[in-house]
Length: 113
Length: 115
Image (tube, rainbow over all chains, first blue to last red; front, side):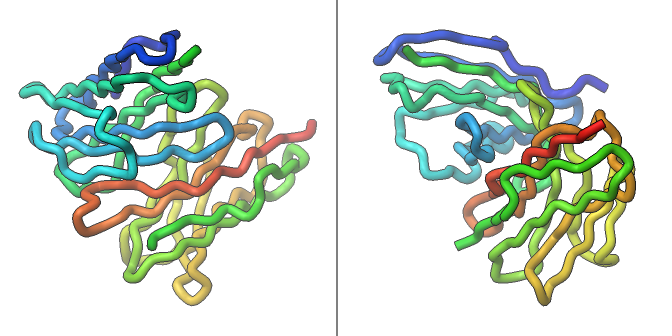
């Protein structure tokens, strides 16, 4: 059984640029959730995708957007990067929209200069 | 609004000593509750979960947690800490309604283990 994988591991961007982060869900899971974890903080929910549709969104601006593909992998896109977007971005997969037992990937560390 | 509070930002215990990490939540119904552990630069690993039933739940790595509805608490315990337990621990509650499978996390408790 393959766990949740994320790419890239690390990324450095400059303010105003756009970034795409990728996540492959665990085998058998059809739901992907994205979280932002700032340094020294707990993860904050960005949004969840279930069967290719957004299924809940946290308090993040529209420049944070996502996609889920038919194989249940997912992308997180962030436009017009700001310095405060520097964080660890975590992807979690689960089985069934609304299911709370989520399995996390190792994360992507984004640094915005 | 749903929320999670972990009152202790940093705890240091001696190896072999017992451990209790505190977690209090605010929620209108029976919550789904979780404890996750995060090693430096890593993702989150699920230690244990509570959905319903027996209020004392067992998890991996010798951890257990007790759900106390009257105190709105879900404290994590381990009888004997090992040096490898040094990490950041997060308590989380599962949201409901139109928030889908949103998890709300506390700020975390950093555990240090003295030899």
